[in-house]
Image (tube, rainbow, N blue to C red; front, side):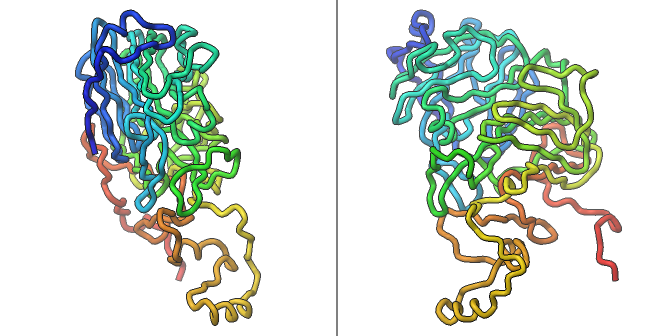
Length: 424
């Protein structure tokens, strides 16, 4: 669903971290609001300096307007409903209709003006994570600016001084607002011929604690999150990363969760080519198949999509590839509880014994669960249950795709003799 918010009048309160004059006299650009959770490949830049746009996994890039040499964006902080996967929606806070908010794309040297309107039930700010900018534009409530009151619009102005991969998030009631989903990606592009790749994906790592049957996250949770997500989506709701065979592929990952995530790609080795501080010189790169992304960090990895197939791509912390995890569930492997089960079945006919042989029963049996709740291990592939959830998706490499084709090509058709088989 796509809609547009109309222009706000020029009489809106514009204080912008100490800024009143130039922006205060200007009308505010309209804010695009998008609630769809599908990946939306961006068009080429309609104006301003050229760049090669990124593809936000299960997201989109913010439009802008050029005015007197400034690239202007309108960001709206507001409550949103986010479908985390089919069958489950979360009541979150975000930007412009979604959580995370839209990706902001600019070019090194751009003069950027950001109108930020607060439609939350409390005051907020935006911190431009990793940026070099005037101190008063850094977005830390109380320290460098007053908080943005409910219903008001503030303005941030600064030059995008260095290319790289960045994020944005509140620095006011930060624990609550980030736990509710307030975050977004920022990419500052270099000259189009520098660091050029064929496909450039971005997404944020985040985590939620949402009770089964509920939709609003607990905001005081420190460690025991039960939904680990990429761009507020969990498998099987995370779209695949579709690549053309032979493409040079970049994946930019930002971590705004409460723990680190070792991100692992099957079937290909990659190089870490970018960090929070900028691009890694070629002489300093080395091959990996897993890279750990720490809290508050960003990583850009690159690889050549050489081998056809549906390659798993996931966090390698095993409990981060599950949904609606029960932290107090005991381990019943090896426990013979048939006698007890027979007594329970007489009272509860639908009772099923689970866990005595391992966890696969949870993916093979359909048990009643509360509405708006996802199974712990879910998703089905061409060979049966995938037994994954949370931070898991696939990199689908195909021959003959057009340059801007990101549509899901379906499951890979394996050539005869290339699938593991049973020894007879």
